[in-house]
Image 1 (cartoon, rainbow, N blue to C red):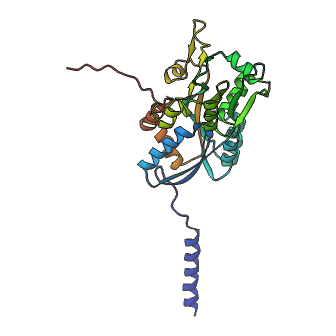
Image 2 (cartoon, rainbow, N blue to C red; image 1 turned 90 degrees about the vertical axis):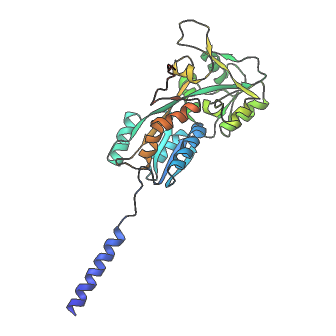
Image 3 (tube, rainbow, N blue to C red; image 1 turned 45 degrees about the vertical axis):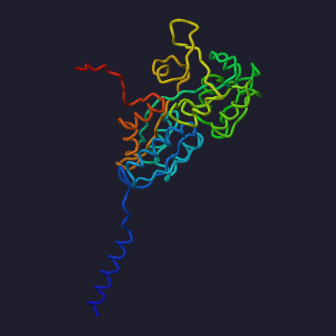
Amino acid sequence: MRKYLYLYGIILTMSACSNNVQGPQDTLSSGTIHVSAEESFKPILDEQIKVFQSSFPKANIIVDYKSEIECLKDFASDSTRMIFITRGLDKKEEAAYKAQLGFAPTFGILAYNAVAILVNKSAKDSLYSLSDLRARLIGENAQQVVMDGSHLTGVVRFLRDSLTKEKPFGKNVMSAEGSAAVIEYIKTHPNAIGFVAMNWIGDMYDTRQVEARKNVKTAMLECTLCAEKGLFAQPSQSTIGKGQYSMSLPLYYVLKENAPGLGSGLLNFMSLERGQLIFRRSFLVPAKMSFQKRNSMMK
């Protein structure tokens, strides 16, 4: 009898141990993670994740697009491993996350985007200075302005922090249901101006953006860093990289992994040649790698 009780105890112990064994964790190229990203980066991040998952079929990245504030709220929860926003963490946020997690999240810039000024194709006025834009945003100039008010993107934060500063937006500033809605509004309102991230309108390989360009165009912005006054620039890889376009917008990653996981795998992909080339192909400025044209000698 004692022998049977002993065997029964061993079985119970083994059963209890097997119930506590965790399933396989995600790796650099497999598993499932949740990611939150602000809406203005949707076109380029969709492309990055599509290529990454096609290269690593066992990787499942669930991405939700929302406001920058909501992304930061998600990051505080256990389910969200990584976020993409237009700024890094400040010292207070770093300390709070470190206290919560036991380690400090990593963050950095992957690429540079821009805030594009969108006008109707028929608009005669397509040259603006920063003071011109500020006058419109605070209502001193009553021209109608439209931006994504549903997601409160980094574009909206940039305009508020850099241009309007302490003053609220004017009554002439209206809210659209996303960046795509801003473009649609400008298509049919010749007297309005809109603000979107450049990757929503500047990708010449995206057929939807090429089609939109038949009805809208990007305005030119006065160069504030140019030695010669009165120069204006379109948002482009060249003008962003040289500092000639005054409204550039960084694309930051923020990652909480203290061991190699799928978030680190995605970050590695986007930081190295293939991911950086995707940024470049989408007409953003890669921040991790410099791609230069070199002349070769042909014999």
